[in-house]
Length: 168
Image 1 (cartoon, rainbow, N blue to C red):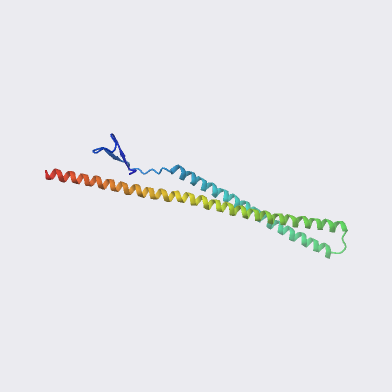
Image 2: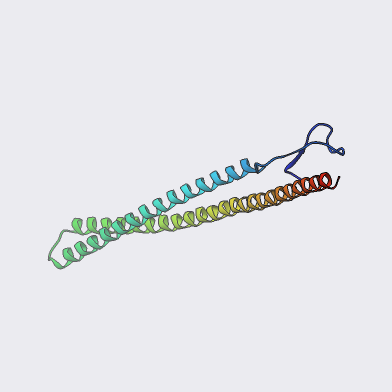
């Protein structure tokens, strides 16, 4: 039993036993490492979510800029005569804003994929930590049960000794 430690000659008959009342989980360092790993995964997920939020905001801004560029292009065409250079410049600006929006959409998709990877990493880290937590609780319960058995045996021994003394 993990809570009984022999002293002196060991397991010989009549050996003096002492009870280890304090529970110690031998894998506590591993559990702590896994807990830190889970915390790190949470931080990485938070960073990825923050990056994704920034991508969304930039995409919204680019969309508004694109709408404004299109409106100006329409106004220029409807406003009457305009120089060819003005029309070419506005068209180039519109195309550049459209490219920026497409790049923003790609960046958002990449960011979504990164968030998914980070979330999966967090789920795995949490699962690993929870497995060790469950093992720790099972071992704690086993320890408590063994301690109760030992205490019960001690009480039985005391009762037998008292009964023998009274009978003698």
